[in-house]
Image (cartoon, rainbow, N blue to C red; front, side):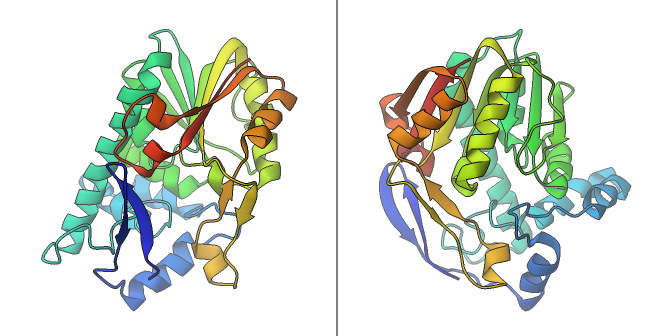
Length: 286
């Protein structure tokens, strides 16, 4: 497995492989999680399997399924955890790490935008950790993701009475009504989209936000670029990475009809113990 660079407490550290995935895991990843369109775990039978599983087994099943996707459990094979931990313990530790990191994002970055009367849109919600954290501070959360399997896992791990998990298409948010949202937020998502998808979703954000509604989007600031993995297998099990110049990201939002568009370094707002802490937000208003 390739080495991965991770930012910990503001310092770059190179994590090294600690465990090697089994041939069975690699095959399961290819058969269950692979996607040429980055809709990892988007298999129609996964929600059915989750629903039919005994309730006491659903969390463990969700952790195992999410371990197949390149988006989640990023440290599962690296030297982040002692070798003596079992596979089950490693996945539980990754669950706890995600839980704490998304609570931190909510408490330190999003709380300033949240109000009890709001409907918030979590774009690219993944397993729902951030949606669950936000749900305690707003009236409703609409949590959307392109993968049906990931949403089934989110329901098992991070369900709440005021969260609706919805599937979105590759270029639209048709499941979300016009002018029905007060706040849209997204973290660690648009860097994995193609640029034309980002532009399309910005237009969708303008459609679903109420007049005066706000948006907060995390992105990677740099030269405008999209890096995709080559090869049939690798292209289906690894994530693309996109960076945006400040001019590009603000231009796309203004073209979508937004005002008060502003790029802000996360570090200028708070300290975050995650890669996101060294990256940027773009804020905007409908």
